[in-house]
Each structure stands twice: as structure tokens, then as C-alpha cells.
Length: 310
Image (cartoon, rainbow, N blue to C red; front, top):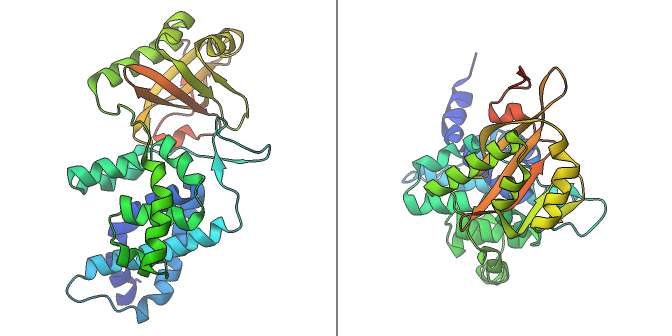
């Protein structure tokens, strides 16, 4: 039987579970690691709950800030013993940990935000932003997220990080370069049409159609494989000598606020999963494809097998 204290705790913290998970994902670049850290955060919050005294005039905001403080500190501790996560196009070492995709349904809380906050929330899980974040020192990373994504003031951020306002402002000044990047076209109608045509070209094995949709400087990578390809010619050669020797089915998904497809190849009896392709589309062209070969399609609500040849 649930005690009164447990019921009170659950009611207080449950509304913030998805957004705190998203925060930890941004900090760590991995949903798996983020969920582990959130579980630890909730355990520590429960242990501290009897002594927690939220502001009576704004209890929800107090609980939210308290959870973010615990979660951020757990992330910083985690990052103190773990290498940053990369994509093949940015990796600087032979032995690396790979960035992981985020199913869009984990960002459902963003639907409750006002339009400006919603835009910032979705931009903050784009792959390019996450990669850039991973190259910041952990405390700079935390300061940027707390200030510019979550909207905490410098004073509030200093309290959450147990540091000074001057330190927060210094870290933020160094970190702001991360946000200076081109933004993909996520919701434009032509983006959805281009993504649909891209998937159809793969299913038809039409390499010329695929290449025609790529930007001149497009990039194609397949973590955890370290190899990656840049430019139409290199990508075309890779496709005709590798992936397009198979037959494919693509099922639409959404990851990191971007068009994505669970990819299935024909194994002689059925179509079986190969990974998740996340597309960056900008200015009417596919700028980057990251094919996450270790992604679990079940996380995106998609089947583990497709029967039939078509």
C-alpha cells in the first residue's frame, strides 16, 4: 500500500519526469545514461523529501528547480568518469562513446510550453547542437542549458550549480558559440515531402534520386562504425557498392525533432531492422544523414520484423 508520503512525493515530482530526462539527455548525449541518472535523481529526491521545504507561494517551481539541481549534479558526477559522446564526423579519438538518438515522444512535455519556449526546447535536441554541447566542459554545458534552454536567471543558475553569478556568466560567455549554427528546416511542408521522396528512392534502389536530394557537402555516417562519407560523389560510391546491394523498407519515425526512418533490409525471409536514419534537412536538401546502427526500433514504436517482400 502506498503511504501518504509516497503519494505526495509522486504527485509533486511526476509532472517533471520527461523534462528532467530530456535535460539529462542533453547533458550526456545518451538516453540510456539519462534514464539511469534520472532514476538515481528520483531515488535521491525521495531520500531527501522529508527535509525538503518548497516555497509555499510557488511550490511547483520550487520542486522543479530542486529536481534540476539534483539531476544536474548527478550528470556532472557521471561526466567526471565518462568520455564525451561523439558522431563519426566529429570524433577525435579511436575509442569513443557514440551519441544516441532521442525519440520525439520523450519531448511530449514541450507541447505544454509557449511557442518561443517550445522552439528552444526542440532546437536543444538537434544532433548538431548536441554534438557541440559534448565539446564543452561539463559545467559550461550545464550553465548554457540552465540559462538559455531552461530559462533560469544567472542568480538561479548559480544556486543550482553551487557557484557564483560571475562564474555562471563567464561559463555562459564561452559556451554561447554552441548556439551559433544553421538551423534545420524541421516543420516546413517541403521538408516532409523531401523526406518522403528520400525514403521512396531507397526502397526503389534509385541511387541517382538519392544523390540528387543531397547537398553538395552532405555527410553520411553510421555510428558505431567510424567511417563516414562527405560529398555527393563519395556518398554515391559508398551506396552503390554497399547498402544499395540490398533491398530496403523505410518506416517513418521522429527523432531529435528531425525526420527519421527505421531502416529494414531484406534477409531472404523478411525485412529486419538495420538501424535508424536521422536526416538533417536545410534549404531544400539533405545536409546530413546519421544512421544509428545500434538504435532499437522498438523505442520508436516500430516493429522488429516486416513480413513479405514488399
